[in-house]
Amino acid sequence: MILRRLLVFVTGVFGLIIPIAAQNSGTVTNKLLGTLNAIQTTVPFLTIAPDSRAGAMGDIGVATLPDVNSQHWNAAKYPFVKGEFGVSLAYTPWLRNVVNDINLGYLSAYYRFDEKQVVSASLKYFSLGEVIFRDMDGVLVGNYNPNEFAVDAGYSRLLSDYFSAALVLRFIRSDITGGGSIEGQQYNAGYSFAADLGLYYQRPLNLGGLTGEFAWGANFSNLGTKISYTEGSDKQFIPANLRLGARYSLEIDEYNSLSLAFDLNKLLVPTPPIYYNDSTDDDGNQVVQYGRKPATSLPLSWIQSFYDAPDGFNEEMHEIMVSVGVEYWYRQQFAIRAGYFNESENKGNRKYFAAGIGLKLNVFFIDFSYLISTSGRNNPLANTMRFTLGLNFDKL
Image (cartoon, rainbow, N blue to C red; front, side, top):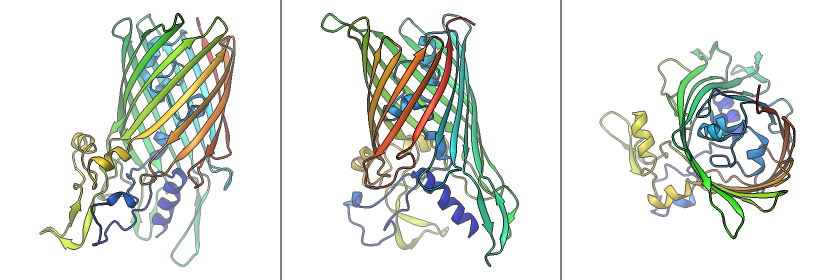
């Protein structure tokens, strides 16, 4: 009982896992998109935009101008970054309208050791604040501060003058109970190993006599093992993800520049099927009425995620999240950013505008962002200011 409540709390924080309404109803029709059917994963903190610049543009980053925080979005952008070494620290308060001790911290860095090759690393740490544990009789068992973190290292390389690729390896640890035994069941921290594969392309593309640049990117992230918090229990998927995007940047004059970008984002995780209400197979498992039974093999689950939705192609399209954003720079020193993020109401219903500013002085930069929810429901970042500090050196 305690674990169930804790899991509800954790997933409620992210707003990424939504209870399946009427999923097992025997009266479900072919018109399935009227019900909630959100994809379920563990450690969803991996999908949170960690830096203020991307957050201010509606969570866009796979093909935006390369910067020190490219590790989360697409490490293949690093060979095109201007500089030899960079480091940044980002802080995101979470649920500030409700509590004051939940937050996300992100530390990232890169180092260029020649014209074509860059190594990078990052640490993402999510603190869930203090949780009070009680037994079935309401007696205090103890207090604990659940936390999750991911640490990774990446290598990126130019493959041509306009094209690059990257590989990132990631270690994930999630501890939401603090270990020990609850109601006779032993709980432990969950572990996972994952990888990101990134591609990035950019080249000059002038329009109307103005200097411009076109770019596109693709990033397969969190391709890794499942996580379990108990011995012998069914393991849960981590948020494997595919992100595609493009950008066009325009040099208006020697002082002003403008970038427009968009991202398409889809979880590579099986969609929950709809089961018959009172039908089981010879092994006692529920029989699928609509959709497909979740794959047990990880590579198959990534492939199956494109065609396993109960309502077919129509529902698959609803699983694609769309972000659009714009970034304006004055003399490459002051930036104004804005963006919009949209997710189907049947898959989580996260919809919000975002805006922010950035300031760059020599090697130092600072970014701020602010989010306004438009979905009619509270967003964990609503009315919250978050910021990123960083350094970027042309030479060490």
